[in-house]
Image 1 (cartoon, rainbow, N blue to C red):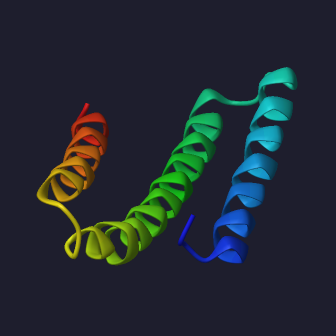
Image 2: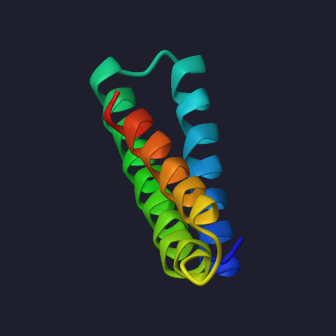
Amino acid sequence: MKADHKKVMTSLKTAKGQLEGIIRMVDDDRYCIDISYQLLAVIALLKKTNNEVLHAHLTSCVKDSFGKEESDVDEKIGEILQILDKIQK
């Protein structure tokens, strides 16, 4: 992975902690809207982290493939398009 390992791991550990907190909220039968806001916060953090990983991929792996065979470039572009398709769903 070409993304900033420390930054990505910090974000993922934060998301994990938030999820554990949400699980406690559900166990404690907390107000649904409060739980929903916390879920949205985790989703936002994960989207931000995913953008960091994709940015690193584009500026390293994809960029590096341009000096190689056309099939390598097409493969890298195809990978990005698959991810974008999943993001939009």
